[in-house]
Image (cartoon, rainbow, N blue to C red; front, side):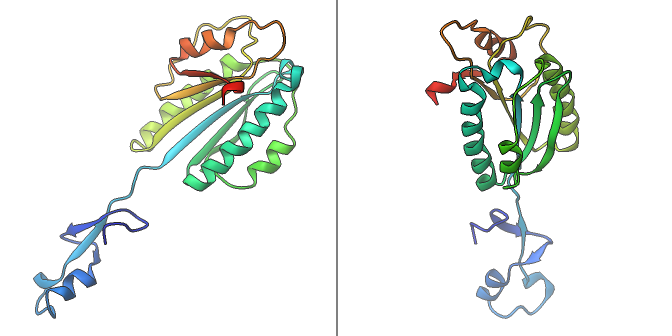
Amino acid sequence: MDKGRQGRARAAAEGSVNWPGTLLGGRPQCREDVLYRLRKRSAHELWLVIVDASASTRRHQALSDAKGFLAQLFDDAYRHRARMALLTVSGQSPAWQVQGLKAAKGLSRWLDGLGAGGGTPLLAALGEASHWLAARRQRYPAEQQRLLVITDGRLKDVEPLPRLDCPGLLVDIERGPIRLGRAKTLATGLQVDYRHIDSL
């Protein structure tokens, strides 16, 4: 009774009938003898993933390594029944691939076709993500939001940065003998944790 698919059952004035609890007290003689249970649903999780697929991520198999990491992430999201939002950064402007849908195995097909090219409109993507998350918080106040940014940090400027108001992680995929190290500065500015992909 304590562990159902919808959460912990508890006594309530209305809701679905708790038949085992009711019948353990004997055959109900009146309405007051019937026990009810109210399911307490756990809050959904939303994972917002921003993927830098700009031309610079072609170097030293950076995007290829990121795709391996993303494949594992999508599998974890599917098993956790988390909702996914996916924003890609390449070309002239960011593009939404998924917005708040349940993680599905179909994401692997999108991942297989992901290639690098174009510019790095990462600041635009972060701004768009900030507005989208704020609107979603108003609609689903109990939802637990998480942010993941995958980038090599190769930007001309890392300011001004929007406020995202949710815990997050920036995964640095910069590779090669000469590293600019801007991804770490970006993570600090966004107030999210920082990890290099080699440490994952």
